[in-house]
Length: 282
Image (cartoon, rainbow, N blue to C red; front, side, top):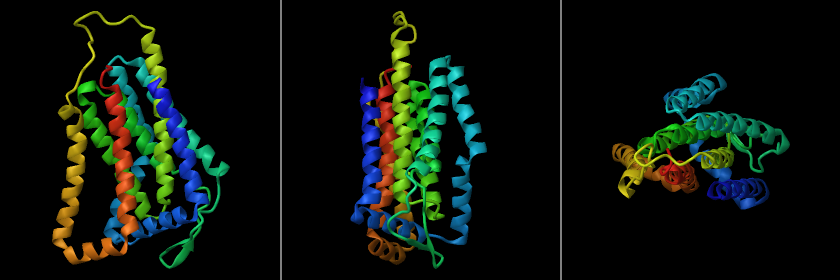
């Protein structure tokens, strides 16, 4: 039931995100403002790094990484999880490709890239964001319970890094990223519901065999908290190196700071939440 409630919540949030981005003027303007903040970070070296990171979720490397997740579940003798992970990653990406032309509208606020207006039609939700978050969440499902906090933290960091990279390259609007994350989360919760239903039909393991793993709060939340502290430390180091430039940029692009933080928070919340609801299962 919990997983189905999570999936339903994902659908509701998905609809609200689309409506807000395309039908509420102030949200559309904020969306564009956040994107302009990312575009302001562009430099030749940053573009090269961003391309390398974003391209990890291109079809070929994505299929290879997804296969690793499926094989990891099979090694753990979790065939249902392997099937669910393959289904989640496939269904999420197909859903994104269906929604793009179905909801193919031009973003309400034009953004200029290198002095030229860019019209983003049918870019919602982001396929790369969907792929990155699907991979991150399925990795959590495939990992042993004791490793899930670390996998969740690393997966969230990966999905956010991919998203920040293609935002800097002007491939998508920030609302496209939020949509992609929610598509991935919705399908993941449906997959979890299917696995839990199938597992419930099997006899419970005998005492002392394959017992559920219980993690302390510190064990469960330590790695995600470390990711947050690491991000803060990295920002702090950049600020110490160029305090005037960083403070001026943050002051002039407040929406960007808030938007980037929101994307990071959502990515970490989705991966951490999945980890917390699955830690009592193998």
